[in-house]
Length: 194
Image: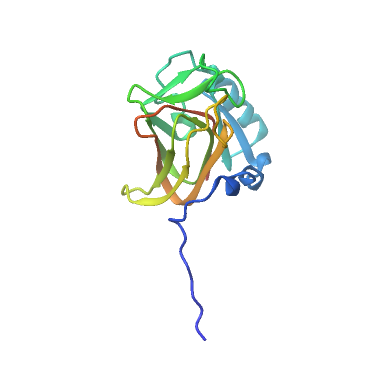
């Protein structure tokens, strides 16, 4: 009798699968990454840390309506079509702090490109409709995909709560895209692991 291996990278996880996904991450090996690198880098040097396992972006140093592109490049990620906002619409609450990322000026799309490959990406999302998270390799070949199945705005009749954790894993992820066709969404606590 032969053994059989199954590749399930195209399986779309459900929201129930994501409920406990945060517990899988080792919080002790996480660095909270600020857009202002001076103070954080000296703290890392003093601690003798060489390479963190996971990086969680601190968005609070960003200015309201600041275009976010290379602010976190020294942490290994560059954004495209991203804007920092402090939501005034109560339908888009923040998960923590006051600032979130939004796909703009092109509505419904945001991309993050990593300077070296990562193995997982996670963020808390609130969206006006279905939001698809796709991971790509160096050659822009699709590695994996997951989705928020529908809208999860606050104070709506959605069965999905706002700020739902959306995560994706794969080997050698070089970029991820978030796409809500003709919709709007926010990201909070953007985190990636090597």
